[in-house]
Length: 246
Image (cartoon, rainbow, N blue to C red):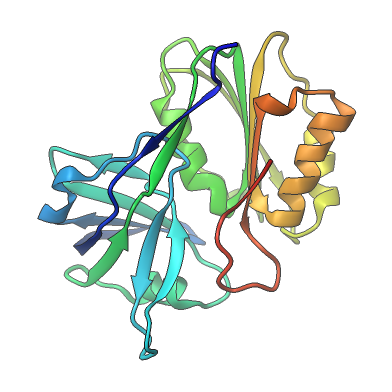
């Protein structure tokens, strides 16, 4: 059987970049465009890649956080990152207070997991922390691809509009508590999925992502190999890394 995911590994090194532009794209999402010659050999092949951001806080070692490369322009040597603003931590504090000219050190990505394009349809589900990956995925979809997105956000002001060559259907579910699996499960249960071979991608708070994965495997009998689920954050853990579920 043809491999569903092809993995690529890259040399890891730290890169120091300069903030070029800062924009609030929703009331709780900041877009930062970084630039620098260190990006000359930067590589990111998958929409859900992750890089490390390093923040000096006066401790012996810098604090690190995982973020998705929202967009990369190799000609302009610019890297775009979207920051979901939530409880204050080093990344949120830096994004909120940063001004053009400020510097940020990043590392990675360590590699890319590229999903084969041989699916009839795609379903992308995620909360605010997953929107950068979802938006990039939709924008990079080829013409004729069928993709459905379900964004789990606080209210209509947090919805985003993505341009795409694909046949894209966007759904949004408004909820107050991002850690309640019941809310996400209710939104997913209302979806009618197309026929054929479909790939399901899920990213949210860890308990929510796990519950959604189990729903597709157990309630919808969706093949395990056609699901990729990850906890992008964990309730009560300020510095949790991305956790992928097998």
